[in-house]
Image (cartoon, rainbow, N blue to C red; front, side, top):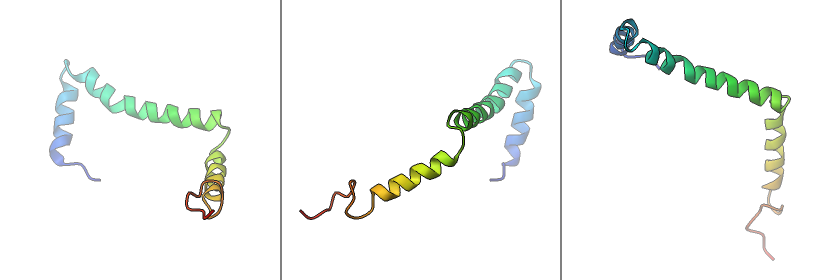
Length: 75
C-alpha cells in the first residue's frame, strides 16, 4: 500500500522537531518490536510453526461430517 506523499513530509517534520521526536520514533519502532517479540516467543515457546499445521489437521478432522464437532448429525 503506497503512502500518500503528504504523510512522508509530516513524518519528517515531526521527526525533526525536538518535542515530538521521541513519540514519533516510539510510534514507528514499538509496534515492530512487539511483532518481532511475539513471533520469536511463539517460535521458541512452541518449538516451531509446525504446531499450526498440526492444529489445523486436528480441527479439520474434528469438523468432518459425522465426527464430534458435527452439530447436524441425525440421531
